[in-house]
Amino acid sequence: MSEIILSAKHLTVRYGKTTAIYDVSFELERGTLAVIIGPNGAGKSTLIKAILDLVPHEGTAELFGKPVCNLDREEHLKIGYVPQKFGFSKNLPITVEEILELSLSKTPLGAAEKKKRIDTFLRMAHLQNMRHEMIGNLSGGQMQRVLIARALTFLPEIVFMDEPLAGIDISGEKTFYEFIDTIHSEYGITIILVSHDVTVLDKFADTVLCLNKKLICYGSPKEVLSEQHLHTLYGHDIGAFKHKPCPENGPCELYKDQEVKR
Image 1 (spheres, one colour):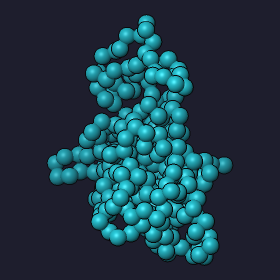
Image 2: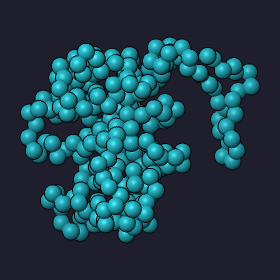
Image 3: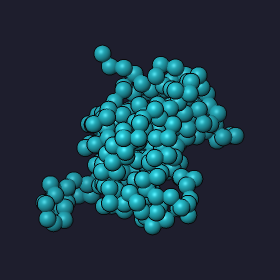
Image 4: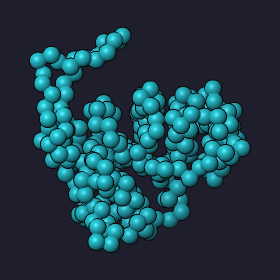
């Protein structure tokens, strides 16, 4: 029987007279990889903050069957959070490996198990050759992967990622999604990810939440990624493209008989 790990009921957040999100309700089963999409200003970051009880809100959010505000310390340690902007200075004299060691400092793992865990996550994040590198020498994409790995190394049961691809180039995006897919499949961590990239949803996501102040659509990628839903979510100026299967060596092409819809 499936277990509901996250339940949001009628979440509403107002900043003064401005309503950021309104009456949002949904449930996610344990082990889901869910992606929240929507235009700028749709309230995606606010929704995550409301779930985590980081902003005043109406309605309720429950994790592990309990209101988030009532979770104890051990239950809070089961939650990972990757914010949109990291308060982490690249001027700190610390290496990639030491950052991951800090993430494990409050766990009961022994030294050998910690090293094994760090080795595993450095490999998954394609950072094994950077373990002794000072963080000031990393590119933006590499630093982003280090900090995401840091949020996952202690194996939370659920992790929230608020636009973790900000500042990462296209090649880095591919590596990121491979990393997330591996984490999800190997460890069964429930992942809620805010993203602007609708092109990867069908490949990586189990569930999609379409948000524009309120919940526009919610379900599997096949169910929600219709042209009608995308028009409702983003407006009628969005373009719809069809692509031929991409060759291994060469650019992807549009179908020649397929017009771009506006």
